[in-house]
Length: 240
Image 1 (cartoon, rainbow, N blue to C red):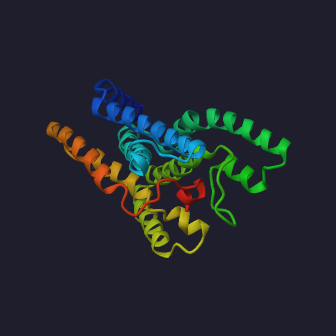
Image 2 (image 1 turned 180 degrees about the vertical axis):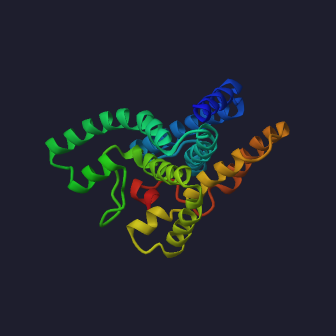
Image 3 (image 1 turned 60 degrees about the vertical axis):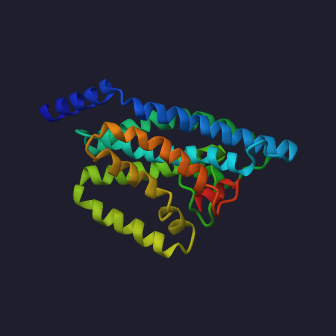
């Protein structure tokens, strides 16, 4: 009981602090994702990318990366004092009901039109895309949840048995080195490093002046984000 109470007190303190820099980053990340989808729609309908061109689309896509880093930070802070079962249950309650409800609409529509395959059904229900080939969920934007759930599963294992962090990290490093098929491509996707960056950031000592690193980061995205990346990718490309 004391352990549970300490956990609730810690979480209450975290949320009472209202880490405003994180709240602001969440807003800008969400706005960036909206910008990216607006660019994609504009390009599809008109063939043009607007005033900022491809760089604007790439800047918008960086919002997803910011979300993944934020997820690492927030999960690290809010999982303190929770058991593995409590953590997994809370994540499931927060994510799955609404997701499954929306996915059901897409699956039913796909079944009626005959465009849905058994692979998309399995991926949509389980959020596991690495089948005999990389398969996107019926709700395409849920590709980010595939990585979120992978991160939550790894976190649950580490909370259950902290020493499992080393096999988990070894599995990720091995998969990233091999990358020879859908399973290793998904488990070893370098985008998972963004969650780990968030975990590391959450464990750094507090430094108020670090807020000035945000405009530096925005400038870095604008300068270096376009290098080596096409402005638009399909969902399987992100998963792969």
